[in-house]
Image (cartoon, rainbow, N blue to C red):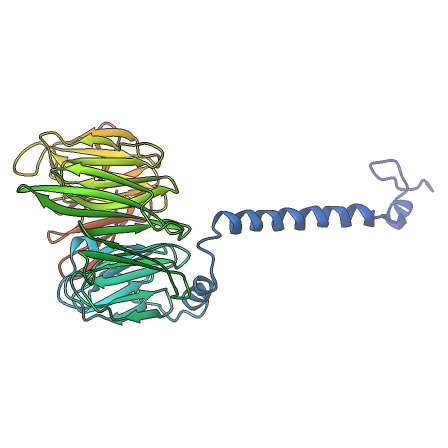
Length: 402
């Protein structure tokens, strides 16, 4: 009787409840400062890594798409605008599926809403794109168009037909046309559409051109005939010099397309092999196709990975898949018994389209996953490890490959 109630710490309960809990304000301030500093550093690193992709245009497009919902769609599948879309004119630009048909250039959101839609009047349209921009032209047509995810930035008419064009993440671009008094002419422009360089080719028709990431140079692939034989030449142009920095002669071959891997390295897909050009060396390194036939290829501009499918038989079946890394080296070769109609890569994942079926290939050529893509499937574009957009004859589909 009369004994006080004690807490677990043997302190009288009234003393325990009345005891003031002191908070170290300096400690709290330091903790909050460190927490905010970590967040700021993480954001800074993300912005630095994606500095070429982070633009006001992209930010505005993100607001319109994800906050305002101005490009919400009803989901895939979605019908294409126009009559036809060629296999090479379906790709990702800024992570979005886009295509150039015979009448329109369209960029879609992940819900199949139209982020951008512009009418085309080019014969044989071609689209090349980056994380920020796309350039659309028609082979032989007199004009081209530059777009971002919000608007058409520029539409220009040329005096002569366009042979090739390319654009980089900074908005610098080059256009190759039929030359006046020359076989071909290249003109390069900055993001304000001011001409920064021009070069005329007197001996070769330029069939494809690539501009580097800084807008300071380009690789141009030309073709001619000599004694009835086809002959190709690669020009490496430095926009600070009047004459080409390098020239590479390639006999009895046609260059289909070239891509920059770095400021000093490029890779090209040709009729007889894959050529890797190190600009410090006199000759390119060639990976020959030998007796195999090129069926399809794809280049991932984000990872700089080139994937090539070669058939060992006349009917297009029994394909080998060659993977070239960002240094232009053949990293792997996968043997399959498939007829590969289209190929795509996402980071380390390889997706292929074969006879209306979409598959994920492992390094041993085994089909680890597979799904129906539709009997009319023409092109596969992976946007995740097991998700892909499929171009059909009249519509675009979104599938899970499992």
